[in-house]
Image (cartoon, rainbow, N blue to C red; front, side):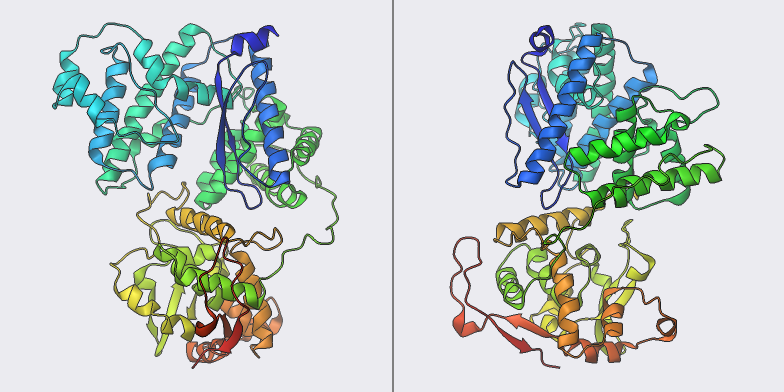
Length: 556
């Protein structure tokens, strides 16, 4: 009970990764004798996983509190401050707001860092506050001159108020309790990281997304150094990433996997990780609600790949993940399903009247091409064109450091006549050069691409319309529908594979090539489900009460 009393009133924030149809979210709650918090989901499986994650974070925090406070090395404090920098950039890069707001935000950070004000508003990492009025009240219209005119007092109260929540955020992620002296030094590093992030976000608000060289100054956090002559898990990951240059989404996912394993075993020494450690970690992930497929195909696959690379480069001698897997049979009623013609018609009817533009066009493009939504969300104006007399989409990695799933994903495919008839080419002509569906991206291949936000938001929009069957992924079910509809329309599997970017591993497939007019002629056979105009009525509620559609073939 002494631990509970010592932590009473502390606000703990737990980051929950995306799971099933639920996006990532942060859950904050105040600690006391009991803990109450909304799990922010209606999915029982997701709720269970988040409950286990919160309990695990609480257990680590209580253990650290019982063990007592300790210091941090200078490198560890800079690394923790780097996590604050990354948090702020990830939250606000997409929509940074105004440069003036960030100028005021930075001014308050600097004044608190230098002890020039007795109190300062707290930074909420989830919301961008426009603090211009408060900054002008404290410092006058010339912020720099006004701050410099205030004498530094040495008082750390404002620094604690301004940056304390961010410091606690990164400490709690790693289950760390630090002494007062260490906390004060960490607060200074966090404030410096906030200033660096503020400068970068101010430039972004001005339209300058040039990669910030200061981002490279932050090392990865290591709870404990590797033994002499050894290598840490983080070091193994960073060296692998530097050589293989994977997509930003892979970097984010695999970095989380490495951190989770290190937290489970309690150290970072890659050579001391055993098969028993991996098995125990795997069991823990399953108990927390992670699916067998995710643990097998993501967690264990990542570890095997990292250690395989480490062995090839003589950094480690054994692969502790080799042979470890989750034994699980596929249960009846869990495989992914396509949308029905009826559902496709309803979805396209809803999208036709929706805003913004990506909500209007991406479902129609996905249904009529069978492409992955991530491929379509990266489209640029320059990649919608006419070749061999055929309107086409060039599905390429976006020029600002986008990526595709596989080498075969890069392809040029015809645009379905129904899309042209709906006015898509006119929409493209109305846009300036650059991305069709997202704003500016950072251009940093190690960060999540801006189009990913569009994909996630579109999936959420589809769920909000009432398409909640867990076996039908919000947008990927359109890809399943396309593959199922092609043979009904007389489109061969080989053509469908070519359109969707599926590899044909057969001997004949290596020799088979299709020109664009042939592909366009075949694609035009695909009928697009529609709700007849005379039968359309205002859709109530979630949008799934629309009348039964008819299926009509596109002209062409």
